[in-house]
Amino acid sequence: MNYLEREYAGGVLTDLDEIRRLTAMHQAELLAFQRHLNVHRYPDGPFRILSRTVEKQIDCTACANCCRATQVSLSDLDVGAIARYLGIEPREVIRQYTIPDPEDSRGRVLRQTKSGCIFLDQNLCMVYEARPRACRDFPHLAGGGRSLGGRIPSIFKRAGMCPIVYNVLDAYKKLIGYHPARRLTGVA
Image 1: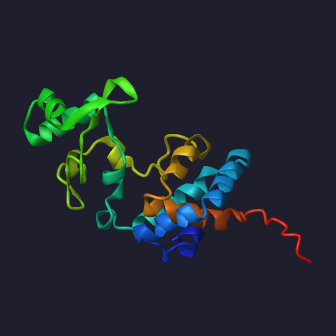
Image 2: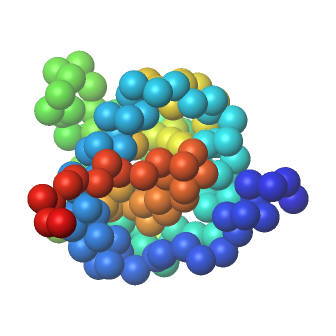
Image 3: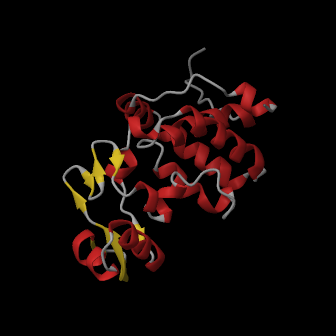
């Protein structure tokens, strides 16, 4: 166990209502922190280690909010994997389980029900072994694909809906020594 893992092992917040409340209450501070990260370039390594450390402490099946609150874009490989898993043709996966992507006229997204993703049963994924890459990689913090700087806006958008993201950002502020600017009140 390295220094970061020892320092940030334990004490994560998992209550989604509390995370939403704190995120809303500290929205201005989060925006300032996002701007700070955009201006100051920090190495990705410590952030990735911290992300993996927090991810190990949180049981996503206790929350599954990402399955309720996000749209999942599908690649042809994702559709094929789901089709093989379900034992049906890819065109049937598209017909039964997807809708056109509202942001990409050529793409498809998983259909949502009033409870979330079409494949969500309680807090479990019915196609977990064949889940799309976007789901496998969520919350996209520790992966090595893109730099932290390129992912900052999408990471901050998820702070109020994902306990992993919320806790990683909170711990990362401490790790880099970030302190929001204190405004002078004019009181002597």
